[in-house]
Length: 258
Image 1 (cartoon, one colour):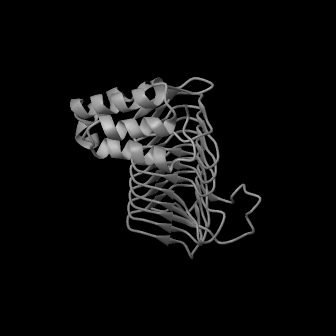
Image 2 (tube, helix red, strand yellow):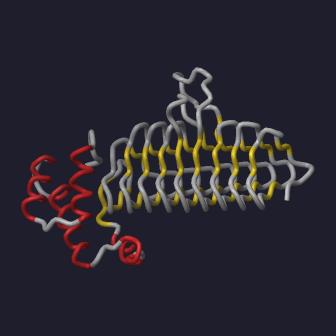
Image 3 (tube, helix red, strand yellow):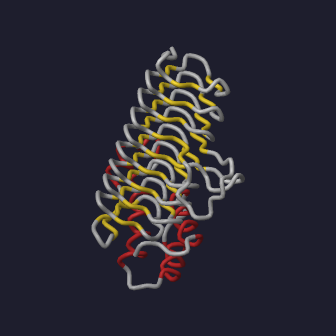
């Protein structure tokens, strides 16, 4: 399963049924789980911890050295879960410091040329579109889609079930369940189609969807301060896990896109 034309450092730890194609490059401080496929020309560098059933396509680089002026050469980590599809020319940097970690969850699809910088946190079942970029110390929660050429600036938090349309530049936090579009980026409604199509996973009923819409009307279309909008949501809209998620996100954020 390991091509003799690939370079695999003898210190690297490979699980069962791992495929390593010709001209792949794997350094020593690397752990690769069972049934992963490392395609031709992929580079798996020191600090990579790769779970099970991941596919790394040609030209992808995992655990590149952080592009961070605070980096001093520490042996930091990139930790990736299971079942991710990492397409051609994706670059993912490891953390700046040893106690940190760049982390990618399970079932994500990282499309051609996506770039994740140091200490980025990606949840589960996300899609990062072609040439999308996520800057250092940013976080993307579960089931979120970044379309092609999206730029997320440093230390931003993108909530769950968000759709950010192509070409957007995000410089503040984006709360859950919504669509962002345009430049400058603006609120463009609820991510209703995705939430409804993924009902079994999102658990959002039509009733809850109406409550989410009403909550965001108060935040984005009401003539209120953000603090007053949150108070009105808590007072006027029946509480559910989804509404609590919105309220907690806004309260904890240092600033959302408005």
